[in-house]
Length: 114
Length: 111
Image 1 (cartoon, each protein chain N blue to C red):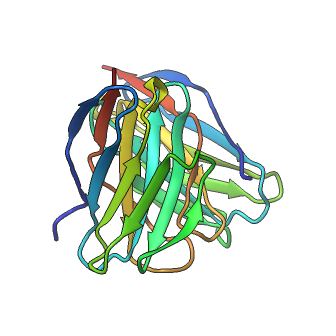
Image 2: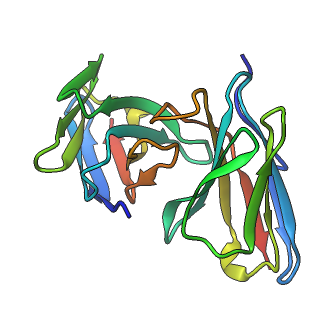
């Protein structure tokens, strides 16, 4: 079974631009969560999608948004990029809809904002 | 919200020795505690997890213990090998698919 995939793997943007990142979960997994990883703040939860609905949200500004499609693929969008948005963005998928379940991470998208 | 603290931030051990990493959490509703290993430039990989109805779990050289009363859990790696060198993250979750992570421990196993 193929693992979680993310595209693109690397991205360079300038301040003020917007960016869209994509995540394809493991086949059969319906939940997709997004995390931001930075040296200073570590791994922080952004949001989780299940059945095309955002079910949980972390403490990030409204510039960070996401969506999930009927095939469980998910995208996250960051608008009006700031230098501090430079980070590794990881998505993780899990099989079940409720409860604490194993999350499998993708390789991440490394975003650099200049 | 949940707050997970992890110690130590760095740990160096001789090959063959044991390594212990400790985490504490604040939310008594947390019931799932996974541990992830992240090698340089790679994705976090789940190495072991424990749920709140269990006090200890072991998988070969790796074990995790959980003390719900004290709200702390620990990772134990025995007979360490150079390939165990990585950053280890603990995490906690209260029933939703959102993990609260510790700040990570950089483990170095010296051959």
